[in-house]
Amino acid sequence: MPGIISFSRDGVGYIVVVALAVCLVCSVLVASAATFLKPLQTVNAKADRRSNILDVAGLPTGPDVDVNAVFRDRIDLRVVDLATGEYAKDVDVSKYDQRAAASDPDKSIKIAPSDDIADIKRRAKYAEVYLVHDEQGKLSRIVLPIHGYGLWSTMYGFLALEPDANTVDGIKYYEQGETPGLGGEVENPRWRAKWDGKQIYGDNGDDVRLSVIKGSVGANTPNAEYKVDGLSGATLTSRGVSNMIHYWMGENGFEPFLKNIRSGKLAAEG
Image (cartoon, rainbow, N blue to C red; front, side):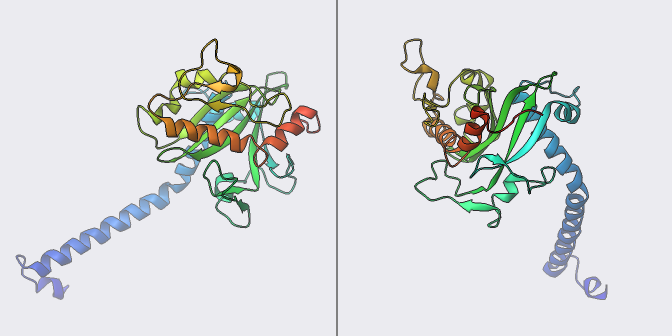
């Protein structure tokens, strides 16, 4: 390359050309690595998501567990039309990606500001639901994906319900960017345990009553079955959790589906 050779090694032009060449080579290497590793990243992300679902469903997980095998044997993945609460028959469950659909105008709906209490702007028309069965094939839990804005980030998680489609059996957040030690405590197992046995709906079955309160729920707290301890020092994150529960368990979320399950209109087994 006569042009480069003609530069003085002590000159600015030589330094700039060499720096650009190094940047170009590094860019090609990084882009190639990202492209080459993309399939592996996709597989790992899917396995991690499944591992979180098994965890909130009370099934075995960890490095010594074949996550895919447990998922295949114990969990029935369905896709639900949120408008009707019925299973979507024209969707390929194995290929459906609810998170990707939420950003596709053809596969999602824009949420009116007055309804957008979870601050998510859009949601997919169809949602994934995970029906967990025991070893006898009987429904043991219903796992639902939830997400909503906290203080700093959109938090993604799963809520597990008992077969009555009303009693909480677990909650887990697998992606969030809240303040460590404060809002980030949504991942703390001790706080997650406070959700077990809580009720979502009131006696009429369509009034979402479950909320995260400010402070602690005591033995004498009225309607304690509908209340969860707030996160200390994280009022806005706690409010964000409450809001997403109210949105996703409400009429614009999974309420029609859960109502169909409770009434027996929709089969959850077999």
